[in-house]
Structure formats: structure tokens, C-alpha cells
Length: 192
Image 1 (tube, one colour):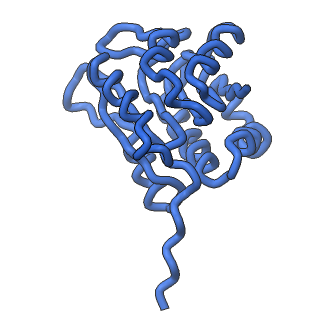
Image 2: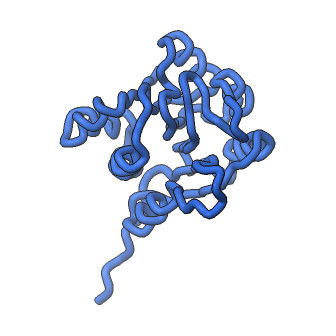
């Protein structure tokens, strides 16, 4: 008898990924993580490569569409700096992103898979969270290594698919075996 397939995780991942290298032959991507997690049954995903601000705005608009409501984790995988992600080699500020996202992240998780984007004042981060309606905003306060971050993201995204409440997933990561990695990366998750 063939066992029943495991139902996919509680919340899907809507991933927008920027270019990591100028060299078009580069294969660097977070997509293999998403494919593995979906094959494991942890979560479902949508993944789009983003090369321009116009593409970023277009797919952030699509993120808010009713047909994608199951995708409760907006995963922004880009180069980053304090309070910014990098698109087309130029900074896009959290304030600009909040304008593009609008309230389409209401009750959802926005995860920045980017260097130092959350190395900002608590007030600025709280304002971004309020403007987007996000339940949680998570990411890194430090410059991070891609391989270490990818390993951490497997556990993070799996936990977000498993736990009924995102806060429980973040608490799991901060208190279990990955707590030292979370600390090393400057990982933080801020809620209402």
C-alpha cells in the first residue's frame, strides 16, 4: 500500500530573487532550497527572478492578489544594505518597498534574505511593518555569507511551513540548535 502524500505546509512562499552576480553564467540562486522544501512537503512556492524595479513592482502587486493568498511568506532574496535591497545595482529603500507592497502583506511574513537590511532603527522597522500590514518582518542586521544563510533558511522556511503561528517558528529557531547561527547572522523577527 502506498502511503498518502504529506499535505504541503501551512503557508506558501512567494519568493522574488535578484541577481547575485553580473556574470550571466552564474548559477547562484535560492531556488534549490525552495524546490527541496516543496519536495519534502514543507511548503509550496512561487519563485520569480527580478532584474528591474518594474519587475519588482509588478510581482509585488501580484503577491497581493487573492489567488495567491496561501503564499503568506514574502521572501525577498537580494543583495542588501542598511534599510535597502539592491535591484539593478541601485538601492531600493524600505520606504519605497512599503509603497510597492501596500497593505498586501497584511497578516503575513516579510522575510529579507539579504545582507544588513534590518540594521536600522526599531522605529523605522516598526513603520515599515505598519505600512505593509505584515504580522512579522524578519531578516538580518549583519552582512551574511550566502552558504550559511542558505542553511539557516532551510530551517527557517521549513519551520514557517510547519508551525501554525509564525512566532512559534521564530522562537524555535532562536531557542533550539540554530540559536547560535541566528545570533551570528544577526537574525531578527519583529512583530506587532
